[in-house]
Amino acid sequence: MDKFTTLAKPVDMSGGFKDFFDTIGLTGGGLVTKGIAAVIAVIAVRMLLQLSNDPKGALRKGSMAIGTLFVAVILALYGDTLFSTVTQAKG
Image (cartoon, rainbow, N blue to C red; front, side, top):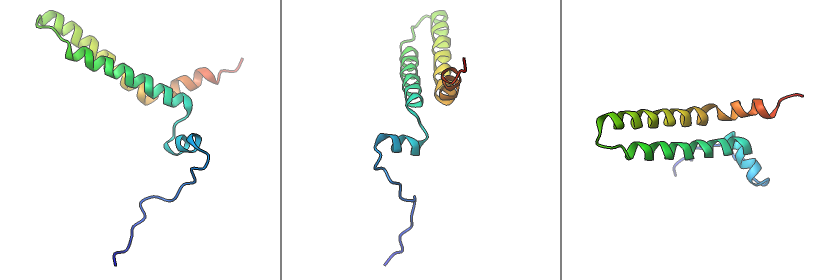
C-alpha cells in the first residue's frame, strides 16, 4: 500500500470565520481592502475592453485604464498596511 504524504498540518477551525481568516492571513479590514481592489480591477478591465477605434481617444482611455489597474494592484498588495496606519492612529 502507498505511503500517504501529509501536505498540511491539521488546523482547528472550530472558531468559524475568524480562524479561517487567521490561517490565510487576512483580517476583516484586509478582506474589505482586497474586495475593493477586486472591484477596481474589474472596472479597469472593462475600461480596457471598451476602447474606441479613434487612436487618440483609445490611447487616452487605455492609459487611464492601465493606471486604474495599477492602483488596484497596489491596493491589493499594500492596502491592508496602508489602512492599518490610519486606524491605529494615536490621538
